[in-house]
Image 1 (cartoon, rainbow, N blue to C red):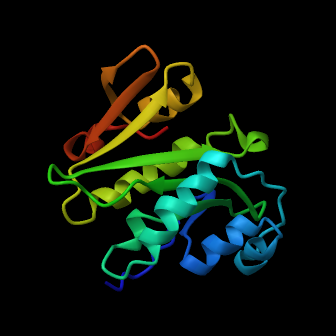
Image 2: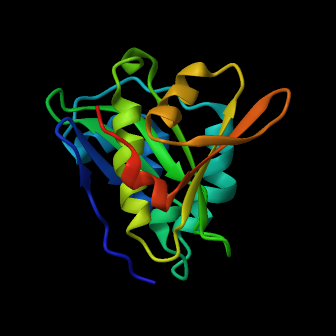
Length: 182
């Protein structure tokens, strides 16, 4: 299924879903992705979990023409003024039968605590709710990751399940209208 590739923007950010070839370049960490996106090169370290997700989930799903790649690919978050990638975002697949999509995200260490991810999650959730079948957005955080929890709370997410180690969060489509933007 061909899906038009949106580029989401805020005053500070440009958020771009990466194509299959761009994902390959992302893994290379040789500056080729940054060159293609016309941003400054950045030393990126890719964790083993993300490499595994690329190999087993992301690349096969993005390469599958029957899937909407926007819900499988990595989206890069770019600071427009500084022209640098500051973090990444992904959906963990298309909406399930209950209309739920799950998100995951990460900000590069040198860009933490600057509000980038709060801003990115807000605009991406807004985009998600404009898509067919999406009624709620879910996220999972480690109970010790208070920064990630704050990102979700600032965007109107509510905790709905907690274990000793993890908390699951939900943002309902109807609730997004009530969230005030700072």
